[in-house]
Length: 397
Image 1: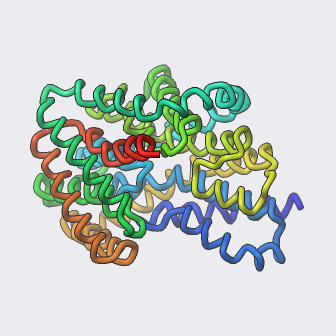
Image 2 (image 1 turned 180 degrees about the vertical axis):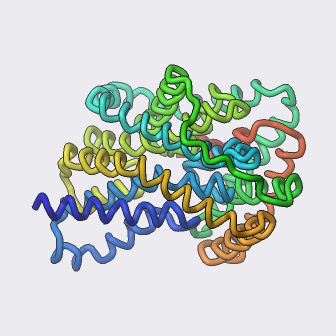
Image 3 (image 1 turned 60 degrees about the vertical axis):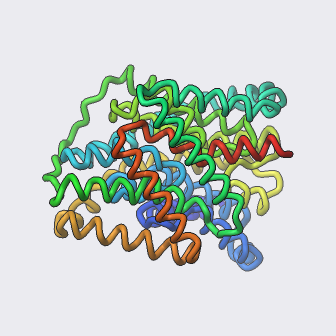
């Protein structure tokens, strides 16, 4: 049994590396595919092994997925806000350093989650019944805070309202995979097109072996990310996207290094908190964890945490190697060509995942993303595309 679980965990690391590096392929998709063939899989491996595979894949994905976000500007929900600071460092020749910062954040998040896991379980049990009744009010306060922190409040308000309306329309439509074209346009394509206007060639990347980092500041931003990830565990309906939007209130995008550490921490902590919520509340907050719950009605939490820690520890090193390999491949292609290839890939994936309506959403959201870049307001304002739909959902039930 031990050998089987260990092999499943290692295979999960490989699978998570693949899903993390390829834009549009998410761990939730793979997890659901596994659930659909679970009857056959359970004849080959135990439910514990399949669960560890899914957990390992998900944690690895959280470490690796920032690579295409930073180098290519192809975001997913949990890493959308990291695109601009990360891509900005990339254009300064510090792309590898940007990836390292998110890895550091994920590592801090992993350690924090492990140390405080059982404490978080107790807090979730106490706070959940109270906080779950005030989601709209809390998100409204967060939205007001985001707008108030910019000097261009009128334009920020316009962006917030527009993104919110767009999010409500998209997420209430019958389109499949609505977040992919929405977030790819707001944070991905718009960033790529804007950077294409600024740069015609990929800047020489500095392969620094060491990343200058103030440990105290790093821990502070990781703790901020951990607190934001914790929010998703106690407030139903909120995901890592919303947590990132709320956390960004307290961490300036202009301070790219600290911001990237915080973003790296959020996704990893968010996944641990989903396990904690499953253990305490019997409710999953993450697609992959939902599949684990379906397969294993009463999962052994300690085993899942062990799989997460092993895969996270290995991913610290493997993600860095993947980033270096990724960068070497990019160096062989002109930056302008890379941008055009990625834009084409996002467009094709949008059509495959969401159809013609998805392409329309991609165009509209890209225009809004370009507007934000041009007028120079914080991009976290566009997280209204997630926050407003959640508010309206809880106001109407």
